[in-house]
Length: 228
Image 1: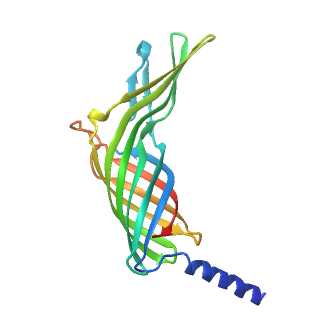
Image 2: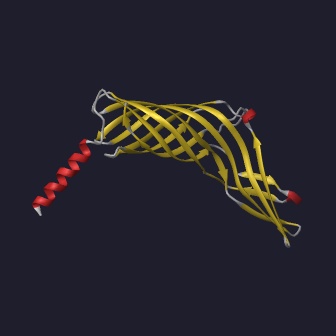
Image 3: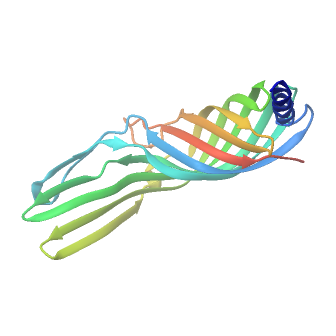
């Protein structure tokens, strides 16, 4: 049993020792993942539907994807500086809502504001132990697309209809964004890196006076890190 425990300990030490790049080295990491986002201060959906139906729907997070890459320079055994570029889907959503009027049963589905950004994050990583890092920095975002989307489904007797709505709202949105990313990551021996971040938006997304909608984005990515 003691010999087995020693072998396990040696294997664990080997994995740990290999799980971080040495000081003075550059590495590159392509990555892919998912986002969950909301806009702060965004109100619940409150509209008057057809036939005078009042429709209220609570806001919720909306999901998307993120794809990009990151370059990292290992300043020391503890600290590194990383900069990257990625495309991320962000925005806000509202819960599906069913209602009826004049014998018609209808449902408002997949209502969301979809924002696409090319983001440039710059972060400092602090490796608390081999492979595990906490991180914080600044992120600059450049808006590429902004759309309001929903699907309206209706049913009356044997007649079913479905209409998709997709309208650009780029003209009403600021084209530049700044956020503070904070998070953690873990690098395995392979080396596969799992990275989780929360991006705290600092700028109002809307150009409208009196509105203060800021990006709040959680993202998780999986990357492959290799030396340059």
